[in-house]
Length: 261
Length: 261
DNA sequence: CCTTTCAGTTAGTTA
DNA sequence: TAACTAAGTGAAAGG
Image 1 (spheres, chains in turn blue, cyan, red, green):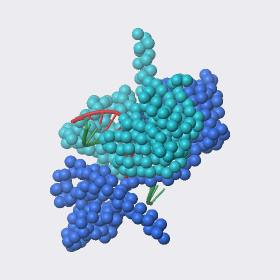
Image 2 (cartoon, rainbow over the protein chains, first blue to last red):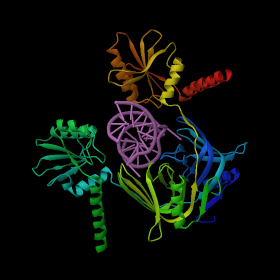
Image 3 (cartoon, rainbow over the protein chains, first blue to last red):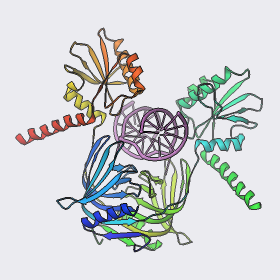
Image 4 (cartoon, each protein chain N blue to C red):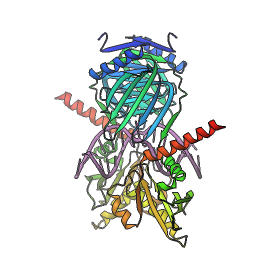
């Protein structure tokens, strides 16, 4: 391998590319081809793509992507775990096939001409962290209950409520009333109101105390307003950024604590 | 441009890559970088990705993809239409930023080292055709009503039924009864049965004639069986391949007709 | 292996 | 532009 486990072919012949693909599979490397191709797919549905200049990616785990020059999504693809083969057709085209069992589907790419091809043995042990999920929002609320309202005290979270599901956070407000908190990472719609309403109603049948319900989300959608008012529920806007900050502060504090020891 | 509008840099310096990215944007080209990088994202959520070897794709339409060596999905990305910039950091890293307005989000990729980089001015006017969609199934049923049952006669399609939506195909069976056809490209579940049930019930309140309902799909899921029986509805399996063939035959016939003239 | 649910969903369509 | 819906959805979690 010349450099960093990367092999680069400028204006390769089609047979060189066929070999590169085979090499890539054998060495569990990432293979990239850029050139003029057409694509056939057959499986859950069928598709054809007439010739044009595209990017083909073959990953070590057996996933395949065909990207046009535009758009987030690949025009054709194959999920991880499929069997890949390459060969020259009698006409001298480069043919790459990626087959999958369950469900049975086949992707075939025919390259008329490859502008360049590469093989890279990539190592990626990096850690990916995503903030903020609804779970993170809950952590933030438990760490800083003031996010809900001053003097709110969480008592339990994800408490099962009969067969009506789980409530996000249950606690007490400053007056000792039950307060059910429904968390939404995205702008809350009627569904969130109905869900909260179910939790609140279920709880009301079980306890002999006032039960309030509040939605915490970055925003509430217009259509949810009448429902919210009708059900006597409340809403408070909380930004994801705010939650993220609370989590970051806590993380940093942990690091600080660790450094002190 | 050396070859096919493709420029290829083997083991480039980071400043060369920064320039390549700028060139790519200016010339509306596809830019690819393979190397060791870390990634930050902030917008609808936030994420971090610690260093590792990955593939960066910058498309002419302003979409960006960061691919790890595994998986169908990019680990980080930016949809089309964002503003891209590249520069060297004081530490000599290559920094690529992709910013988007509505919603406001930013993707930043820091390359420690680039193994290779490429710029390709791709032209892709290819035509993409996907078979079989539900629309194709409908076409197939209208072309060959026997798919539903012998002597079925379509009368109208996508007929509005009160406020309960649209029905896929409405027609009459051999005995002159109404027959509502619900098409599903994938195995039909309870949702399909309920939908069909709504259409059939809505129609029954309006007409003084027997109304049958049938689901056409590649298969029906186990959980849908009791619902189907309970609602007195029917199911017939029809393969996508069969639909596809009917459409192909019709297409070919059209071509033949054209060639005759 | 199948079902359910979620996604920084994306993408297309329509009001 | 915003709301709605489908996707060859993919991916993760649970049975």
